[in-house]
Every structure is written in C-alpha cells, then in structure tokens.
Length: 61
Image (cartoon, rainbow, N blue to C red; front, top):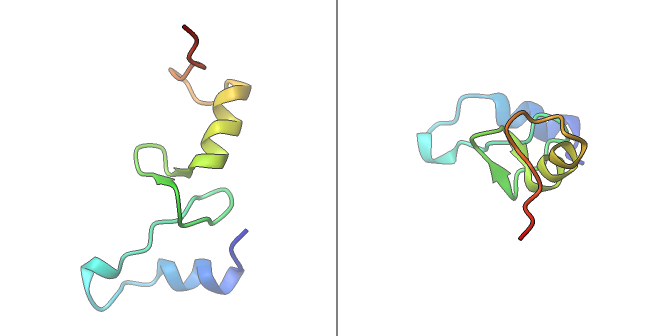
C-alpha cells in the first residue's frame, strides 16, 4: 500500500514526460501495473476472480 504522499506526488505533472509514475487506483502500487485496466496485477487478479471486471474469465484448459 502506497502512502498518501507518494500517491499525491505521482499525480503532479513531472518535469519530463518519461518520469510519469502510473499507480493502481485501488492500492497505489506502482509495480506490476496493467495500463488497460488501471490496476496492479494483485488487484486485477482479485477483481477478476470475483467477476468484477467485465469480459475477464479465469483461464482453464
């Protein structure tokens, strides 16, 4: 879980565009971020398993 100060800092416009930090909107995690959903891998998996993300199903073969 990211601290409030880290989340606020990442929302500011950076001096250079390569310094953009994308964070999960649920927990604030910056690593393992999935852009298409705006979630980190952990939150994505939790929500997908609960069926909260439309169009995502658990794979089985």
